[in-house]
Image 1: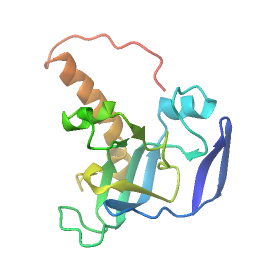
Image 2: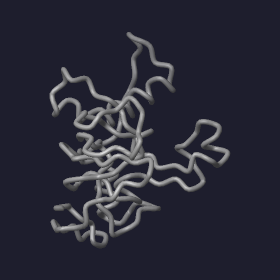
Image 3: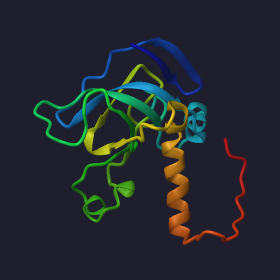
Length: 172
């Protein structure tokens, strides 16, 4: 399959790589859109403190389910359009058991430590899939991951409708 492959830091190549083979709990996803995040730029430049290369960048991924695990009995169907939570956690450490997968002792992220969405296909654990509203265009649905980050920050800050907030920073 074709992929934008970060061969080494600051060396991104469009090339053919092996199509991912999903593990026993993973789905194969045909990528529709992959968003460029500031962290992709940081990884590309070699400035991310834990990123690995080679890797396929991109964790803001919209795609369609092409394959589900053998014997899968769950809410997702082949052909369904989905987003994915890019966190790859163990599920067994204290942080994971406490509901804090974002600080898993073996934390990895799609597009930073494992191949992400700047490719024709990616794979992800079925538990990390998120259904999209069919009424949304692909372009809007692809913004789900950055929207989730902003929503999470607002909820943690306790902001309410009508509150005033200052947002600073260059953004991407």
